[in-house]
Length: 538
Image (cartoon, rainbow, N blue to C red; front, side, top):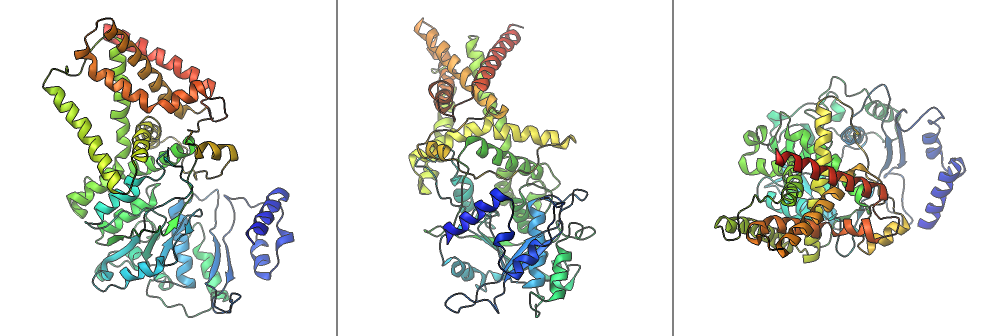
């Protein structure tokens, strides 16, 4: 059945026609609304009931669940919120058609991996001691197809596993988007009835009972109206009701507001992952995905709802610092970029800025470095990680500081100055056979001449040059005592950049670093050295 479906889809993509595969009246009604003038960004709402539980049964005679296709209205003249707007549309349409009290949020690339998941969730939602204040139950994001060493740290163990376990001891984990079961009531104000926000239509209330068939004319007409792109004007949707607007990371922002209103959440982490998702297998796709996250988090960090101001009052110091840890994550680009360039450029000019090995202050530097990395490694291993995957996470953390965190911070600054930015982009999960083979072998995928790789490649070259220069100076009788720390930082940076050197020099496949990027990075490194030398002489 799957192979037949795959073949039909490929034929439709190739021919551009679906008419030959329309076999039922319901499908015909859905597609007849479309014409040649409609595009992905300009079309009316399309709502079609494909399965109705009271009528449709499987081959064994058991009722099938309701299955309803919803595509909200879009218009070029009426800007719409991104993913949060789509979720609020689904929230309204589902309210008038079924109004189920529990809602599961999933991405299109997620699959169910454990049939007991709903049972696990109901154990929490039916617990009378926590039910009145429980907003959602969050499962960790888990992924299929990771290579042995998880070279891009796509598992994101710290964000999706370690940090949520700590937050679970406070008010509960942040909302990660996919794999989250919400109670519908949580989207309509705080847990106390005095904080309840009444929706503009009684049919949207979480207490409304749907007594009509989901195929009835008045239900479908109302659902069509609720999916309109102008419906939310003059309402509380996105501000007091539903998923919150104001950040590209609507999941994090919504969970933050729910906790601020007094709701709690639960982190459910069974041994068998509840859901599995796909991962990007190229470094550029990983970076682009996290640029969007970085911009969205900074939107929260420097808004009126900043965790350091509003969060302190609403959540208390510990929970607000947990949220601040995410919100200000892109700020890591400042120290990482500084340590990637400054000590090395100064070392190339024979200037030493760190304590000597014989200086008592050196012990503090060594303690902070070894302590931080040791603690991080211990937490990672205790969370059922491996040493090789921990090293991949450390390496990609430094790479992110020079790529997505740096560019995300710049994009945010451009955005607040009023200029147009790239906005929301869905991460590509398409798999090329050759790329997939390289990923399975643990080989980094560059292959695209992108400016995002320039800071990384430039830092790799400067670190290598500083290490070679410093080593030569020591062999000539230089002062090892003074230069050790800067030499160590250069060596540490070079070791982390080994995949970059391999992509620049040793590889011949399509995933290598483009020659154009390599040449520009060499020129950039040389210019930085000249500028640094000139400034230091002054």
